[in-house]
Length: 224
Image 1 (cartoon, rainbow, N blue to C red):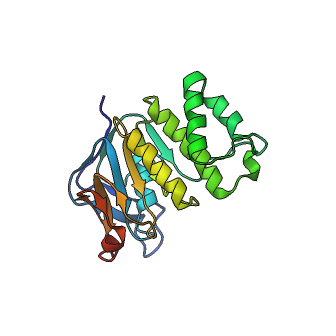
Image 2 (cartoon, rainbow, N blue to C red):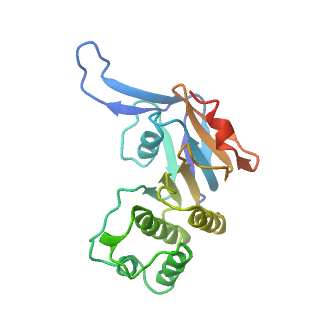
């Protein structure tokens, strides 16, 4: 099965809440203005802060209900954010051993080396950036094994230096076949390669086709 994400016209995202006097019951952040389909490759999720990027990812992951409309996700979902936590006494290597064996364990350790992660250091003593590396190694190793082929990544470069970001980018290029990556991007990120971009602007969710690299600096100037 080829993984894909289908967002149907009029999918509405936001938060359900009890109605208060003078307020609507639901907080509606954005709505799809047309049908959107994402297939294998990298797709960026762009918007100014507070416009619904994380809400859209959580809705697609099944962690939040849609306020209206529908979407379809074909494939195993991995929602990748900063909330993953482990026993502070465990080393990264011990964490990887708990999830993988044999060839997959070697692959995980190989990714860790490429990302300059000290796998012998206790998780509780890792910096924010190094904890993010642990999360990315777990996610990419699963995806390389044909599991979690729909990856919803919420600001995956947070806390990473440019060298490590380039290495993550290289791993993504190597593992692009049969994997859909929807990557929420912080406004300060530089130019990134992508097949398309999902933009949330003025309460509308829409898709932009991308020819090679997307200049986020130029794009964000047009966002409200």
